[in-house]
Image 1 (cartoon, rainbow, N blue to C red):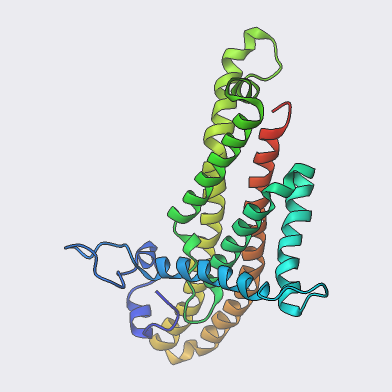
Image 2 (image 1 turned 45 degrees about the vertical axis):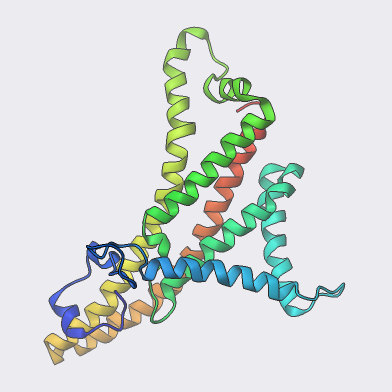
Length: 263
């Protein structure tokens, strides 16, 4: 569902969760299953845009960078210096390519939520943040097992320094916190923010059209609703950048915890 839809439909059918289940662009199966939808297309567009941008920026690298090379280096340098190295330490440099890719992928997909005529972030579907969270989850566990060895890693992750008689209570809490809550909170935080932002923009924009269509006397209220939409769009832009940053920082912090001598 996009903002350019009919005002009559907006008045008759207010925004709901069903607006996130878009029809397939291409038929898939006998029942036209939700597979290749607008959201799926946006994910592939984001992947292609990131790859093409870096290939274009580094097509002819120079010692004195051009504007496009400077933009690419700035994006990578920001994540490497301000996230990877700050959170993990010198060892974070080897994780910088993944963290940069993760940051830009989330950022671009989030940005689709405020692009006119698109106005739908794939991250407003729980499946996409969940997949990213699982990838980060598997990575930090693998990193910890490879660095410490499986037994030592799980021992440090599950058994805190505490008296033996309280360990039966603490070990399940540590397991729940480190291996269940982390991926869940990582995915839900991103999903909830993008879902809520999209719904708010729909409510204020389509609500303005609905009130104007219902009664001309409500025109001033409609204008106010659209003004608030602009203000919310600016706020949503800040949320978009912040959520990409938070998702990447938390991933880096989990990796740092896996590499630390004590968890």
